[in-house]
Image 1 (cartoon, rainbow, N blue to C red):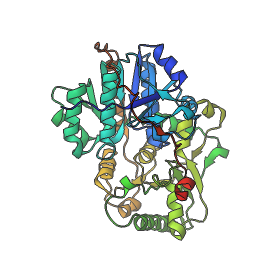
Image 2 (cartoon, helix red, strand yellow; image 1 turned 90 degrees about the horizontal axis):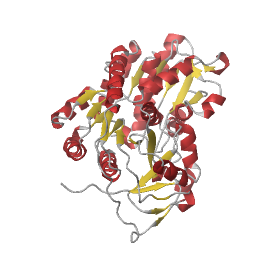
Image 3 (cartoon, rainbow, N blue to C red; image 1 turned 120 degrees about the vertical axis):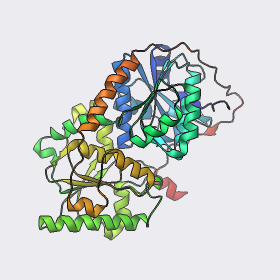
Image 4 (cartoon, one colour; image 1 turned 135 degrees about the horizontal axis):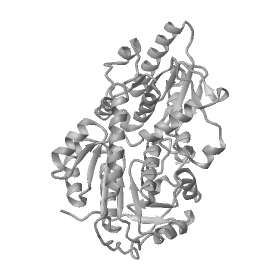
Amino acid sequence: MSSPKQYVLYADAQTRAALSGTDHAALLVGGYGGSPNFGDILQAKHAIAVARGASLEPILFCGTPSIPDARFSQRLRDWFGVTAVVFYSWDRIDLEPAGLAPLTHVPRAPYLHLYGGGFLNRHWGELLFSLAEDLHSRFGVGHYVISGQQIGDEMRDRLRTHLDRCSPLTVGCRDRPSLVLAQSVAGDIPVEYTFDDATEQLQLLAAQWRAAPAPRTISADALVHMNMTAHTIENGPHPLDRLASSLAAVHASLERSLGRPPEYCVAQAFSDRCAHQVIDSLACIQALEDRFPATSYRVLHLDKLALELGSSSSARAPAVGVATEGLIAISTSYHVALFCGVLGVPCFLHAPNDYYAQKRAGLGHVYRSLDDFLANPAAPDMGPFLEARARWQLRLDELYRIAPRRAEPAPAALLDDTPRHEWRPKPTILEVAAD
């Protein structure tokens, strides 16, 4: 078995001070890597809340490609309520302009949590597995928990290798196929159904949504989320044609039932400035040109609401929400669909490939097609999912009361002779166009 790859870790002075001042740190690695994705943000916030509840110092890990400017670390602290933020890269980068330097000497950090969600697949699985293995060795981790995972069948052998290397206390999965797959390779390691790691934060956001005063409540007939990023469009017809056809069907169905043109609220779930890589709702509308059915609509930035949830910015700003009575939704985001379920809003989750079909089944959606959904829109019964989640939370509390085994940190690789690359902030669409 080959040795895990060592990443280059970076931190600013505030993070270094936090790391040196505690031996009860929890390393948090998962779906959130610094990019503003609605569900990933909420999963990270839940992992932070769990660590805080266990009287641990949460250490948030993000990738260097997510850094747009030298003030990013402080914004992360404000949004997530953490002191320590560590960035990782496979390459050595000169990040001094961003206020970051390589973290070559680390204290023992006994806890590691690989939180959800849908990244253990051919797109991102190797990145996260190898990062967790490196941190496990380098920080002397003696208490490791995996939760909220959707696992692709192509990762079966890699999961087995990872479990052999790191021996987590449990492997938590958010859907039944992932549970069965993990059980087939886990041996004596417990495998448990956890449902989704964003659930509790979505419930908090739903409560804020419902509490919004009338002037801050958006009235709409349909909540629409769209995404045409590569992992959402692997199979089937041209994505623009599929999207335009879906929107036309929704528009026609609502117009017949309402006797008037429907009103739309567009949900933006992933506002990344790398617009050539992330094509979310507003970019989809631009790509559709005249095929988007509405001439006017309201926009709700769910990603920004997620970042500000529980932060000082949220405390200063009045709540915002959408009236849910009579509302239906269509989405290309698993977590937008899950949020609709928490709100009791019927939602059609597009499933253009096996990855999304697994997501849709994991939420209990049973409709066969968009036409089937529009004929009888209904929200799934969230009761069994929320009950399973409550049981998992009790189990997670028990796991965090287990003392970590003693493991000494392994030395990091020397960087003196490693060539350094010039840092370039995360590019904007204007810079990409210029290139």
